[in-house]
Image 1 (cartoon, rainbow, N blue to C red):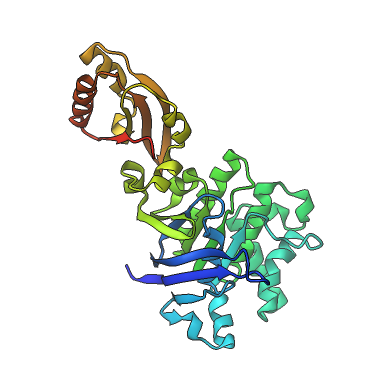
Image 2 (image 1 turned 60 degrees about the vertical axis):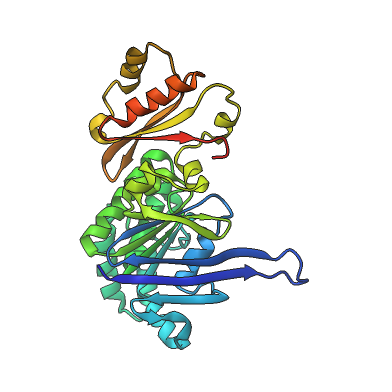
Length: 338
């Protein structure tokens, strides 16, 4: 698979007028996105995610590094050529950014008309895209008459109207409830498969990444600290930043004064197995379940559990060895500083 996006050694610092309080938003960030891939960028607030995604289409110009899109080095292009590249990059936002005084149909037509498409052709294409996002019956409605999920569907139809090769989603589901979020993510995945549009998803929610992304980069304080497939990131998070995003139990772990704390990750075939019950029966010793949940990773169930083992270190080590012998289970000890 060839790469359609390559960011190399991207750095960006926002400089205050008086030179004090400068903010280093990005520091030497490099990654690539394959053609037709759904790639996730995740991090907590202030990690630099939105700045990074805006560097892809040069809405934010990096201080250093290279931005290569579809084999074109954007920082070397003339402004007119850059505008042509930007037409192939659609973008949807958390705030929808719809024109409230225009109908749904007119909102979708708007970018095409700006690009010189005849009004009759624009309307025909807009109706087609509204059908794709399931809003044909809302063509004459105004944004104020729509739910949040419907507004985001209009925004997606509008982004598709420019026939983009790349779709950038900047916290596109953050303002939506869980059920609506799931439907929007499903729609984005359908669009990716139908049109082979490359999608870059920016989010602070691991559930979003797990639902539709192939690979994922973890940002922390402007640095890319970890990158892997979503499956591998869930099973074997390597950095403290990734672990915090996958299981948010740091504060709970720190106050535990008992035995070792272990995270168990289950594959789909094991999520219904009584693993902990079998462990207790085998060693005739109780364990403390701190946290447990089941997630969906690209349609497959994946479970994780955080347990506190007994104070007796020998027993705890035997329990860990017992768990590690089980197929389709990943076992790792959680340290207090994680």
